[in-house]
Length: 229
Image (cartoon, rainbow, N blue to C red; front, side, top):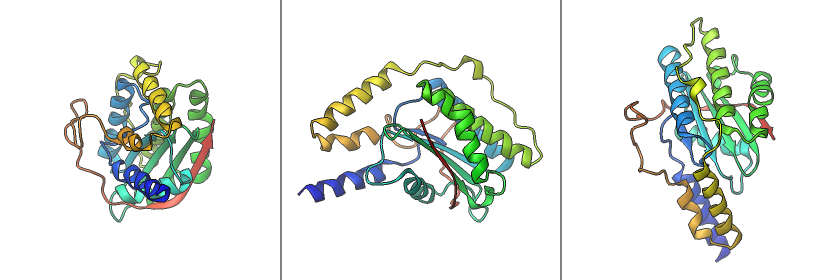
């Protein structure tokens, strides 16, 4: 019975993780302003280079390493354009205190393992250690977008609004974390999948950006880097 229940939890977890846009914040660690700003970064990068930058946060990853899970998500979502494989994924696992940058085949020459590691350690982790996930993810996404744009020989225009981002984490997000822990600790596993169902349903409008049509069908090269805080 327990084995069947565990399989159901894992299936529900993976199935529920559908992209809500370039940014999917299942852990609830991003402020509303940060989520909109990250969406702007990814859309600007795609518009100028065709590269697709996805950001995903989850509370935890059951029965998987973050590296395995990043590859699974990358290939399930098809991040990057088909045959170009020019996608990149930033994956944050809150409970594991880990972050992963997974790189598509077509971008491995631009964002190699060492460079991905530098972005994690020097740009993102200092913010995460302070509990500031919004700023850390924004800073990491900006670094990636600027590096890729420079390689493509274009100027990446930093979207307006960076200075106005809310630096404090949402009190509502903290409430969700606490609620999740209470249910998890008391064995209410049936409640687990509900935390990965996006509010407002699938395919919603993102701050005036219009509908999200999905990623282009790229695959991961298995390269990248992982860091923890």
